Image (cartoon, rainbow, N blue to C red):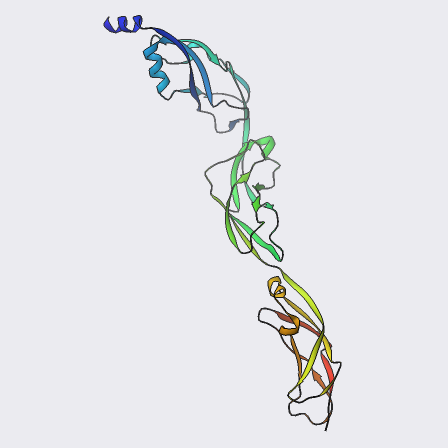
Length: 282
């Protein structure tokens, strides 16, 4: 009697309560493809003390979806849908009714295809990229998922990268109602390295050593293969040495093979001409 008098005699007030919406018991072969509100707004009237107590707690409303079939379904949210303490009266619910669309689902395991943003700096390129895992299992509407060949990552920014790196990434579902069947940490191993290029250097002088000789022709063309940074730092006149070996040769004409010294990291691919005539004087 005292409690009734205390509550009944207390000043009444009106307010809005936000209840988090939770969906329960949805069949595994279905998924919700319409927008689901994160919360329901319920306007209530009641004693100030009870209203204050409700406002300070975490309120949820569970919608039981057991037995729901595919298609567009309507769920009325009447005053009897909520379990509030005695003395609390529901005057309005938004949204009401709650309209949801249920769609048959498909589960598939699809390969992951990396997508890049930008390009590495000059002289560098993406040699390869592998994702871990290389495939993921997803669930989605049959109409959206049945024709997919692969899933793409969100763009991987390689604009300023010059060496191999592992990047954390995510899948880009492109706003499709598709989700992973379980938690996945997606990593991309990106192999970025200098470009391998071929470059020719013309009119490189040939010297004879250790004996002096008249050479014909006296200059050659060198074709080298190697990483781009090596070429960027190369000074042909200082770093490229072409010569013929005249040690122990007698005076007269000789056909000699051109030998070349190149900096470490570069490969000599071709010398043109590869041999020349050397005339040694008496």
